Length: 159
Length: 293
Image (cartoon, rainbow over the protein chains, first blue to last red):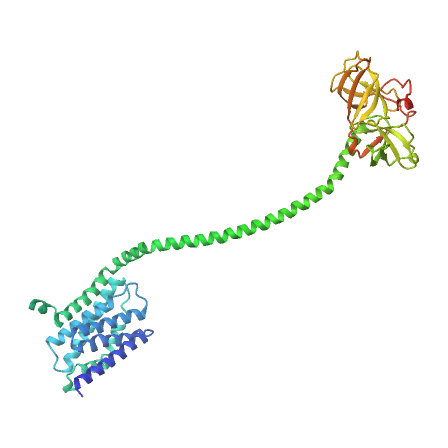
């Protein structure tokens, strides 16, 4: 069996599972934010094509906003997701990290950037709102979801 | 051909899809707030005719239902009013007899107050005056002290006199009977004569000279000469007055004032011996009681 197709299948299954979890975890905003960041920054940039990357990030954003049902104007989160995922995808494309440490640094910086961009675009689309603690949950639990993302980022022969 | 393929290949398709995706989202985020009211206005504009038609239809259905309810209510009310009207008509028919009797009693009471003589009230039991040898039967008789030739009047005028008396009932001979005679006088000329019955409701005056001036519509009163009626009681009105050809008398026709067909309550005047007049009239000089009959 082709190792690459196996990895793609695993990633597709994991993405489906995470999207379902994203919707189900709506009553718990902290874990939901972690899953959301993992899909956007951990899974989407590893899809190799920027269109799939943007699609997965946008779907995750829409599911998050639809599951919360508290946004007066939607669209801010998926847009921010697409921009950050594409940025990370491009960053990984032009300077692929050789070791996991560099990858984690990029993830941390992108999480912080994603937080501010999301806040900015949601502020434009839906109006003033509270930032919340989702980004802190994401950074605090980065040692959990970061290695998983690194595992899917590595080429199959390195896994 | 090459230029088309250069542009429309999978790479450019992906790029276009990517651009559409990102730009679409950005467009929605930045201009969605302004687009939403426009979109809502547009939908409202297109939905308005349907809403108008449906509102009119709903109003029409509501009005129709209300009209039907109103018609039903009006029908019920009309039925109730009809039944009430029928009941009122029946009650009025029942009360009409009493009302007529009350009116007659009221008139008689007024007449009794006007006349300063003692009178007795009698009720008509039967009125068969148009039959041969008929008359008006009243509920007073010998037991009540009645005797023949007592005068009988009503609120509208003179009715007649007592003709025959039984124990508890009497027969009144009306003025329009052929064998009834009463002494009368004309209102203007004061000429006296004898009234004799002619036809139902009509009587003739005899023994008025053709030299007298008699007018139509002239009242005719009792003269009091027969000692049955006091002087000045209304008999009727002249309807025709013409001199008889080849005679010295006038032919005078009088319409009787009293409604002889609809009598109910009557007054019986006292007998000739009891007639005392406070009106300072002269006492009767000659009694033509039987002769006038």
